[in-house]
Amino acid sequence: MINFFNRHIKLFFAALVVASISFGVYSHPTADKAGVQVEYTTQALPHAFALKKNAKLYTDVHLAKSVSSKKYAKSAWYRSQTAKLIYGGKTKVVYRITSTDHKHTFWVLNSQVKNITSKSYNVKLASAGNKFTGDKIGVFGDSIPAGWDGYHFYMNSSYPDWMAKYLGTNTKVENFACPSGRIVGHRYAYLGTTLVPQDLSAAIKAHRTAIKHMNMIFVHIGTNDYTNYSGSGSLKNVMHNLRYNIRMIQKLNPNAKIYGVLPISRYDANGLSRENMSDMYGYTFKDLRVAEAKLYKSLGATVINFNQFAPDIITSQNKNYTLRDHEIHPTAQTAQKMGLALAKELVK
Image 1 (cartoon, rainbow, N blue to C red):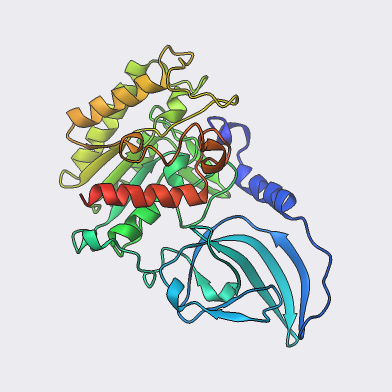
Image 2 (image 1 turned 180 degrees about the vertical axis):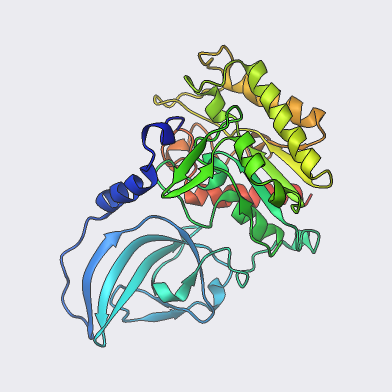
């Protein structure tokens, strides 16, 4: 993850190309059925969607039988396939979608789905009440809060997006997290063709005005500093820089509630937990997490530890399913679980 932008400055584009190759196993055109001709079907990236009001769900790709979507209004769906149809002389695109609980699978016209960030998609927790309504949430950090799964972005459905939906803020999350972001450093990087601040200090400096208007600020960062050859140096140096950055946020907005999110579980290429593995700078992943927690607490920030309140979301036993690369990056589905777990923790 640490060399994501250093080695491949346009990896975002490359990832899309790789995805189109790895997911683009096209089927042969199928026969015309009930006036619907399937031009092709292909695997699709698993982005999250919600259904539009009165959307029609179909049991097969030929749209032969429809099912009412009324009882699925609050369900989240993950796309697995895309098909191009010729119907009534017009071209239509349909998605094969599966519900979060894996109990239901349907086909739906792409015009009948919407992003989960849509204001009309209401999944607010009853326990949240109106406590968070209107709150402006800001996020700083690395690929995990950015919604990058190690290969591509799952657009508009990072765990902070889900958290905001479950809290019922009805506001767009200002997510300034960037893949390969570090606590130590001042780097910028390209996301596609857009140059954005990558490291924490650069992001804070670039978004000083936005910070002043935030109510809740989440900082989720550190795993890339721990990575070998990061250049971040000792744990003492990493914490020195983190302290400086958190104080800068507090100076810019002394009224904002700050949340320090500890790095989530991480594994090596052999599937072993890095918790007690030392990096080249002499500290373990556990040392990093403990030091961050202590620092956040000393500065009055609320410590967010997924391993403590949601230990079953990512484990050594399920990491091959919950982490897209089996090492560090959550899948789109895992991001939803993280967002729900965090929202529940915040409304306690």
